[in-house]
Image 1 (cartoon, rainbow, N blue to C red):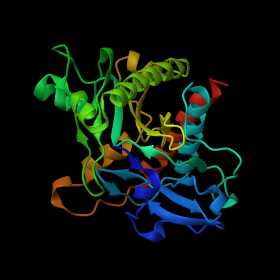
Image 2 (image 1 turned 90 degrees about the vertical axis):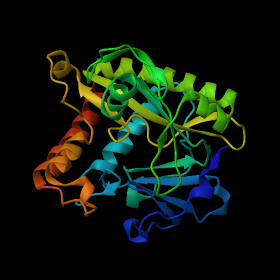
Image 3 (image 1 turned 180 degrees about the horizontal axis):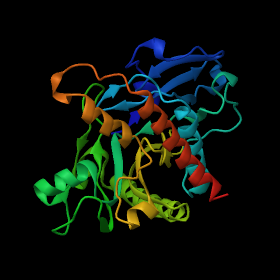
Length: 304
């Protein structure tokens, strides 16, 4: 039912993506993050999570990296952990190594549930495409006539099943979530995801931002069984943020996520060709770096 973090720490990418850190052993690399276990057996229940500057889109790691991205992602995640009244995976008492200061956290290992807890307050992206085809998203029926970027009558829980490495995540219904993790856990995942999303939306509104959608990942504390929020939280990699002023004036394209990169790739690369993605232009790299930094500044400066 649940996946233990330590059990899934198998290298997916080349080891060369990760740097060497004194006192820590590299055990896993994802598209963006590198994970390390301590060589000190007394803290074997902890994991070092390092956010790199790598950027991915359409299931490809792109070249070059985005300067400052790792620090911005880590700062935004830590900001939300501090603001949200929900148990999280941050650990205390073990310092982040100096080699990765500012872009890493030390966290408790969790038994992760294989569910992407996606919450949508607005309709856009793949959700809008599914709505056009079916009138619903993940089995949640929606009103007719919605346009791309419209605010939903109420926020909805539209989960996905986290597939095995190398496969695509699969959008699923809430009934399927119950089959995977059980009714009690499924209900808690939905309730907590919606609650956290609503709390975060109030904070983003004060910052002049709209939180259109996001995804959360939860696990169980092996020692207590408590449901704990883990992974990255409400970052521009896991969320769709819009500029509130621009949205209200009719511009629904002022985003603070990697949509800039996706748009550039769609204009400069044939996704169906099977070829490697092109090297990102200096302009799109600079724009993306700037947007990540701007989001961080907006959130933190207006909510101190």
